[in-house]
Image 1 (cartoon, helix red, strand yellow):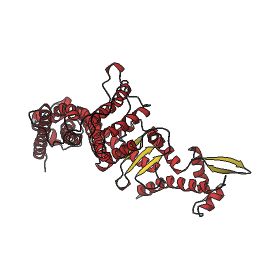
Image 2: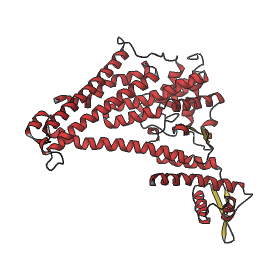
Image 3: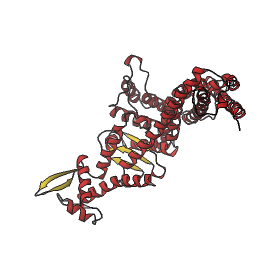
Image 4: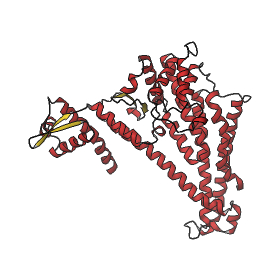
Length: 129
Length: 310
């Protein structure tokens, strides 16, 4: 039970980030956290919006500039960009990613590159079906 | 039981010839299924025998929680009473179980994290990520099966080659290759002699997806070029081998196999060929392994049942 709640909370973080980022992208120019909060229908607490924006800032997905006493936020990348950033972090954290995810290609050995170029450079009369 | 209890620990050696020959001589689908099946059975048998030896070993330790009758001299005479082996089995079994647990946990963690990273994207079967680093893989997840590919990789491929890439990854998902890979990884953790089977299956599963992709796009050459180009643009991850000793890596072997004629689909090779001999050898090894561990288990249970005061 507790584990399920934990999981939904964690998955929620990614979705919340996507929501906040989508709202920010709808803004014309820099927007304040309050504007984002209103845009999302007031479901999220102001502090939550600030937390998520700060996290997005750390991921390079948004930028901010000082506007008076608060910050004005601008989206730097879209949701796909954010997903790409998160995926890179998942893969970089896994030293042996091939052990878990079947990649399309694996790394090349010292002689493999030359061998591969030879194979691909051959005229196309072999193996075609 | 005697020596029977130790047979399943070394019988994985009988699968080495087929692990080596399957790559060239069998259809990749047959090879993947055969090698995974052999690895799974042998790993279970070897672990069962390790557990039996551990019970023997534990019963010898002073202050163990097992019934006192289990360490009677009659029982010691009946089980292979070897102080060193029995005691060595205790850390060995602990190592096997913790290594398998770690593998499972890591597998789940990477899959969970990868799915979470894609949260917020529309729930289509393909996730195209704007990233300059070229990579692609199949992310299994039941109804959330996804092909993940970066723009960096797509940019380097021609349209037909992109179709080949997607067909390859979808073949992984459709045939559930991650289950085969996880099985052989666990087997290799359970018994180090099964490691060549893990390496072989990692390769044959890729070949299986290559062959399926070649059928889908209708051109072996297109798939070969897609693999070759993808490998050349993403060569940033060199494999650590000594330059002088390096045999051709998996990627050139896959490309060469695709440029050669399609492999024949045979259910089971004839006994009178080298590969047939190797396959039957592995099958016999698996059968002996299963019988030896079953025999040892039954004997052990009967001895201990008789020795337990009820």
